Image (cartoon, rainbow, N blue to C red):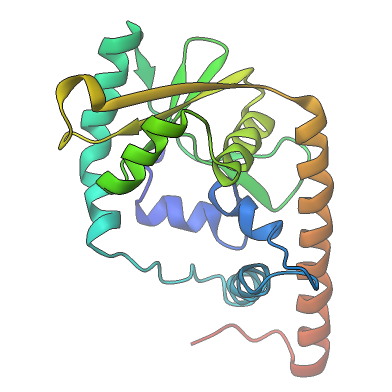
Amino acid sequence: MIEQGSIEWHAQRCGKVTASRVADVLAKTKTGWGASRANYLAELIAETLTGVPAVSFSNAAMQWGTDTEPQARAAYEFFTDVDVELAGFVDHPTIIGSGASPDGYVGSDGLMEVKCPNTATHIETLLKGGIPEKYQYQMYWQMACTGRQWCDLVSFDPRMPGNMQLFVKRLERSDTQIAYLEKEVQSFIGEIVAKVVALQTLYGTAKAA
């Protein structure tokens, strides 16, 4: 397994639609597609043309999430009495140019998706008790790529009191939702391919230096 976050992992994902960005593929405004969709489209076109992964921005909050994830996974394992198997990048079984990197496999049927947000977001999650839509898209896509039947959202904040540090909510597989996402992702990838071909036709196929 190739470790998530490694150079090899970034290379595996280069130019591909990934689970964490499916919400961007679906981003809409009242008048049409949203800016985040256009930006993601451009990012993947550039990656496809150059073979170079886009530089990922990281701030203090994102670093906190990365650093805290192992603690969150351990808390989840203790709370649910399961063992979590780390996962690498998994290509979608039928849609070329897409895949997912689950935070872990649980048993033979499950997945887990870890979020270690700021405290305000964690408190909101505790109070609302649901799974935000953008995370549902991510989790459904992970299930689409792995064939798993459910995914647990794990929100973790060790800065909260002990009984409020861990939130776990399960999302069951929905083939209807997955079929909808697959249709949208295929259409999005079609746009990438068309624009890559158009650019190469006009300007050639030379890679970036």
